[in-house]
Structures are given as structure tokens and as C-alpha cells.
Image (cartoon, rainbow, N blue to C red; front, side):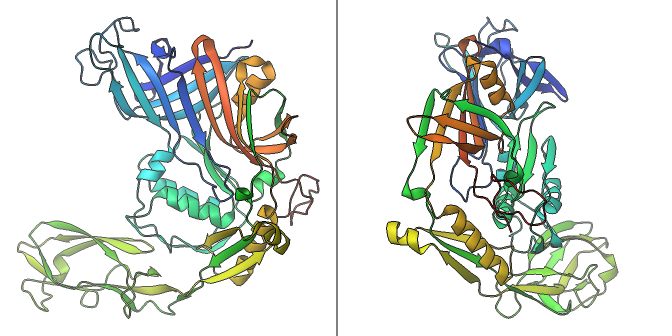
Length: 505
């Protein structure tokens, strides 16, 4: 039986991590953590919010010898302990430290009653919760960009960034990015999902040996080129559930692309204020102005938005309602131009109240044509199983060749059933090899699974990870895995040829 040293660290003061493992109660309620893509569905390409659950000793027998040490607002509360602080799991084995989970405390539930368990139940979430909760704000349209080139823009728009990032070079170069996303409504996580889907790559958090919480992007080729098997589990799983079902088959693929038209000149009126309004002397107002098709009033995106606004053409500001413009010079305008809306901060620098008698935006409108759907099907599979359809949205693509290529690519990958272990669980303490498999295994790690009764004997990629810390330092690890394609194809523009690679356009 091998053991790793378990540390649960809290950031009780900025930049200072404190190990509270002596106050962690695992008897009857193991410390539980999970992260990554916890699904085997072929269209689940982005990690969801990772969670952590653990219990802290809230009695006088804790490290502070204080009742209520882990109760926010209590007279004895530990300094710095509160909702929103960071927490991380550090495991040390053979002299190497692995940071397997990093997040923030999202909920604290002290058990009430002096005669009950004097404990605080802690819930935590990883950085993907930030990506799910935030909304984007006026991201300007970018042209001819790959996923790895626009991810930094999305992350920079967020108030809290991941500790580290690692982006593979994307395969797809998109004509435009951020032109189909509603400002103030779309979350970064939604953008991640769209980008990953249009690349057929993966976005997730991974642990490491330098602090954890690395936001990782894998291109469509990343896994195909990863031929290194991190670990081999041969009959060593305590639990294994294998799915070999029709539900995993998709034999009719419909890939939908979205052709667009862009105005030739930056003269289209994208927004016009429908009513006049006043701004008091010295007052500032912030407006978010969505772009609209001037003919149909439908939401559109835009580029080359005129900035700065032109007096008398784009705005009039005066002392009286109507068409007065005598205060134009006193109106301060700060603009933030986005792909779907603009944010304006208007400040009245005059000594009197002013009327905004005209306010408009001009630029090049971008209009989505009716989408085109490209279909690819495996008739032999349909004859045997019936139509099993996947509708695949490709909002970032506007050319027919991509629609055809993606439809064929997905059909080739998904039209035949494969054995998918939906649950792989093992005791990391059982051997040195299993402990290292747990500590080093991260999403997109390649592993080999072999088990006689299920006739499993193939390579898989880890999609998602969960683990429990139990009394005595026992660590139970569970992986969500997906098959590694073993079909022999070329990957264009590389010199690699191997039976474990597959064609990727």
C-alpha cells in the first residue's frame, strides 16, 4: 500500500496558502473533488464547473482550539476564512507535488446545534464556474483568427483569470469571431463551447506540478498526435462499467454553416435613439446600444463602427429639446465598440442640463444569410439501426467546403458503435503505478485499459476526473474516458504516420 501526502490549502490572505488538512474531517464524509469533461458524448468538448466538497472541524478540537473557527461571522472565526477564498488540493508523492484541484469556496454550512456534529460543510467550485457566471461585454470582432488567438481576449475580459493557460495552435482560421454573440447575455463558457465545436477541439482545466488551474485548449489534432500512453490499467480497476449501445452511434450528420454578407461601406445606421433624453450638468450616463438591421430591426453584428462619433451627424446635444446642438462641444463621449453592441459613456460638461437630441451609430453591418445544412450519412448503419441524427452547429464557418468536411468527418468517427467505459474506478494506493496514474493523469492523457470480462483492450483519453480522499489516506480515483481512434489515416501537413493516428482535415 502506497500513500501520498494530502494537503488542503486555503488562501486565507492574498498570496499566502495555509494547509488546513489537520482540520479536514474525512470519516463518514470523504473529501470529494471533480473536474474536466465529465461526459462521453461526442459533442461535449468543454469542461463544466468542477466541484469540491469537504468538511472542516468546527469544534474546540480543531487547530485553533476554538468553537466556530469555521463559521463566518462568528466571534471565533478563523482570520481570512470566508466564502470566495481560494482552495486547492496538493498531493506529494516521491518528492513531487501535484496540484490536482484549485477552486473557490462557494458555500459554507455550519452544522447548527451544540449537541450535533460541530462541523462546517464546505462547497467549492473551480474556475469554470467563473466562465459560466460572467457575461461578455463589447468584444470587438476579430478577423482571420484561430481559437488560440481569441481565447486570451475572452479571458482578459473576465475579472478573475485562471492561474495559467496553455493553448495549442488551432487548426481552423475563422473569417470572423465574436460576430454571433450577444453582449451582456453570452457567457465565456458559451463562447468556449462554440469555439471548441467549430474546431472540434477541447477546452478544460488541468492540474500540474506548478500550482494547478491551467486552462488548456487542445486543437482537433492534439489528441490524434498524442501517442504516448501515460498509464496502463490491466485488470486493476476496482469498478468498470462499459457501454456498447446504439445511443452512442450517430449515422446521420447534419452540419449547419452560416454564410454572411458585409456592407461595402461604413455608412449603415446601426442604431438610432428613438427618444430624446436629458443629462444633468456634470452627470454621466452609460448606455449599451445594440446594433439593428435598419430595414428589419433584427439584431445584427457590425464592423468598422465609426469612432469617434461625428457631431451633428451622429449626435446633437443642446440646451433645448428638438434639434438644438449648441452644447455639442460640452458632451464628453467615451465609446467601447463591440461586435454586437457599443457601450457609450456620455458626460455633460456644461453648467446646464442638456438634451440629447440625436444619437446614432454607423458602420458596416454584418448580416447572416439563411443557414446551409450539409448532410452525410452511413446508409449501412442506418439500415441496421435506423437514423441516429446529430445536428452540428457551425456558427463560425461560412463556406460550403467546411460544412461538407465536418459532416463527413463526424460521420466517419461516429457511425459505428464502440466500447466506451463509462466508469473507471481504482484505488490509487494499490501500487506505485496506480498512484502515478492518478497523480499524472489529466484530461487528454492517453491510457490503456485491459479487462477480460468486458473484452476491453484499447487506448482511451481521459475526459474527466473525480477523486475521494478517505480515512487513512486512501485515494479513490474515477475517470471518464473516450476512445482513442485507432484508424490509420494521414494527418495532412505533418510527417507523422502511425497506426494510432486518424485523418483530420
